[in-house]
Structure formats: C-alpha cells, structure tokens
Amino acid sequence: MKYLKDFILNKHPGQTAFGLHRISGSILIFYLLLHIMLHSTALIFGNEAYNNLAKTMDNPLAHLLELLIISTASFHLLNGLRLILIDIFLLTRFQEKLFFVVKLATAFIVIYSLSIYFERLF
Amino acid sequence: MNIKKSPLLSWLGQRITAIIIAILLPIHIIAIPFADKKISFSFVSERLSHAEWLIIDILLLLACIYHGLNGLYSMTIDFSPDKRISKGILFFLWFFGIILSIYGFLVLWRFVR
Image (cartoon, rainbow over all chains, first blue to last red):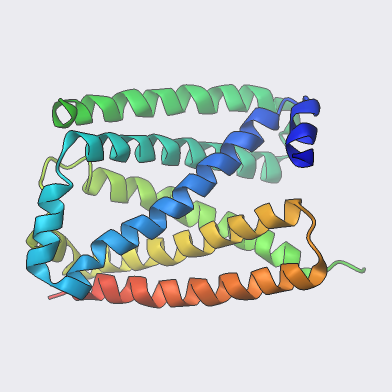
C-alpha cells in the first residue's frame, strides 16, 4: 500500500505513462504465456485438437479479448518507443508532448483494428 | 569508475529486445490476426514452413520472453527487495525463461513440415 500511496502522491507528468506501461507490460507477459500454452495444444494433443481449439476460439468474446490485447500491445509498443527516444535523444522536456502523440497513435491503431475486427465481433 | 555492469546490460538488453519487438510484432499482427483467414493447423503450418517466417517467429519469441521477464524483474527491483531475494528472483526468472524458450521453440517446430 505504501507504494501505491507514493505513486498517487507523486504527481509527476510521466506518472500516468509509467503506471500504464507497467500495467500493460504485466498484462502482455501473461498473454505471452497464454499464447504459448494455447498453441502448444498441437504439440501435446495433436492436429485435430488444435483445429478444434481454433474453432472454439473463433467466437466474439475471444475476438474481443484479441482486440484488447492488440490495443494493449500497441500502447506498450508506442510508449516504449517514446522511452527509447527520450533516452537516446535526451528529450525529457518533450515527454508530455510525446505522450500525447503516443495516445493519439494508439487511438488511431485501436480504431483501425476495430474496423478490421468489426464483423468478427458482431 | 565504479559502475556495476549487470544493471546496465539489462537496461541495454531491454532496449535492444524492445526494438526487435517493435519491428517484428507489427509484422506478426498484420500477417495473422489482421489477415482475413481462419486459424487452423494447415494455415499456421503453411506459414511456418517458410524459413523467413520461422526465423521471425523464433526471434520474436526469444525477444518477448527476455523483454517480458526482464520487465518483471525491474518491477520487483522497484520494491527494493533484499539482495538475496532479488538474486533468487533473477535466478528463477532465467530458469523459467530458458525452459519457456525451449518449450516455445518446440511448439513452433511442431508446425514445420
């Protein structure tokens, strides 16, 4: 709880980006595990089981989760690029503007992915 | 100069794997979920039978595992644990990462014709 309190009290412009980067990173590492486990059905149970699983996963809820993972990954990726840019080109002063660019680009990617996923979701 | 090398290396490793993922993940996403095809064994097998796709997927797998577990480690560092505990966590993460890499490679290899 102490850390959460510190986190809330420390009102730094980069704080939101830091928190979201941590949360999205944690979600993505669990997704990576899930991704490997699901695809390993072919290794463990054979081709038929894999095809059956792929058919089961072809439902709106699974596609919604997929879309959420793509959104999370694109945010994490773009924010990570922002961090690398700040590190290499010493752009600390522009970090807020860069974070705005990250949010804008993430929104764009989410809308684009939604347009692709639209018919799979409904 | 009294700079400890290992945190610097893990910082650098995190950036390098980040750049690898930043290049390969969009390719992965555009080629698979954005392609209007149903996932099946033959679809995945067809793709992974091309050497370039296999190399991309193996690189992406290794980069993601390193990046993810290294990220988890730096999260635990933020809570400033005891040095012994932190060493244990690092050992466990390396062990887990190596096992996961081998398992992931076997999963990919299963699709290669």
